Amino acid sequence: MNSRRRQKQIERIGVLTAGGDCPGLNAVIRAVVKSAIAVHGWDVIGIKDGFEGLITDNPRSTIPLTLHSVHGILARGGTILGAASRTNPFLYTKRLKGDRILIDVTPRVMERIDELGLNAIVVIGGDGTMRIARELHDMGAPLVGVPKTIDNDVDGTEYSFGFDTAVNIATEAIDRLRTTAESHHRVMIVEVMGRKAGWIALHAGVGGGADVVLIPEQPFDVTVVRERLERCFEDVQHSAIIVVAEGARPKDGQEIYRAGIAGQETPRLGGIGFYLAERLMAEQESLPEDAGYEIRATVLGHVQRGGTPSGADRVLATRFGAAAVRLIAEGRTGRMVALRGEYLTDLPLSRVARMPRTVPLDSDIVQTARELGISLG
Ligand code: F6P
Image 1 (tube, rainbow, N blue to C red):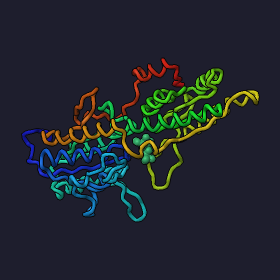
Image 2 (cartoon, protein in one colour):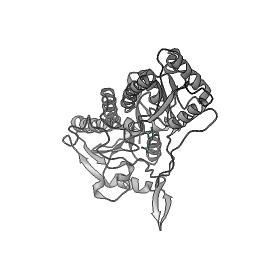
Image 3 (tube, rainbow, N blue to C red):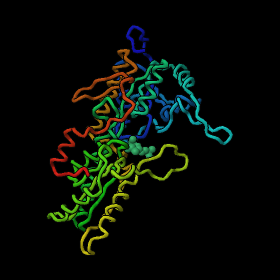
Image 4 (cartoon, protein in one colour):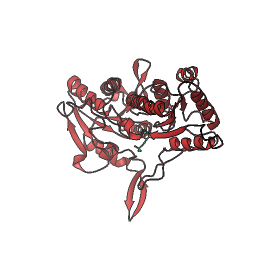
């Protein structure tokens, strides 16, 4: 499918958003629609709720996208197409006589692409979505990938849109929590998202001037954290800010997962902030009553994914959308657009690794954090 010689005349393309929502999704959709129509004169079809829209028979699972339909969506968070975060056509959950079974519905996906007359589809999603896209492409589906995630952990691209907005939100939260930290001489812990990657924690921690940043890539020692806090309280500041990534774990323990939620199969990270607060309180039990400090934890959660995208994310999302259309026009499906340095590039979906892109401990952002006295525990 990625050979230029076999390139069919493009008439109609689709676009879908899979995985969790992320600021900038609508900016990609808008860029795809505008450039596909204005530059190439193609029809564009929006596929609703990620891959769900390619599985169901419901005629309302697709909508024509026109210049009118994307008017005014650049600054809007979420996705006008909807996103089903867990749908995998290779392992599709069906209910059969009360039981949940997993079936392969990819033949239906291939059929639906033909039914809809789609010559190519822009698939916007995270690393899981890129893996599904690669496998579907191997079966003959003409797909182009656009990486999205606030976690910034899609392998093959240095940045994904959504990340900048999430870092801005987390940084602003740190600024606000500092007010309470300083007024009450407290330790304020802020737990941020990121799954198994510490990008949000590290960037927000550096941007917000945190004293401690704990990331999944480096299991932390509670005693080292406590010693750092003691120095903060000996110092003039008499308060401290800790940023902890949801996927961080102590050297003597495991990651913390939220209790299962009915209907959810995948465990969700969350709770390390409260866990850390309790461990640090326990460390103080032997101290005299007037020594020590109060600790409070805040979990930022989905606030980091919501609302209007930052200017940088709007620009990156728009560049990615336009680049995806260029790939289709050149007959180069089976590829994911990516950012390397300042430049847009693309790589085969087969080269998007199975593992998330985590923070290298020898990277300059880690070195910078250490040099500014930020403890990584
Ligand atoms: O991948 C984005 C992300 O927000 C992660 O940072 C977080 O762990 C996860 O999604 C939360 O998923 P859900 O919205 O399904 O709870």
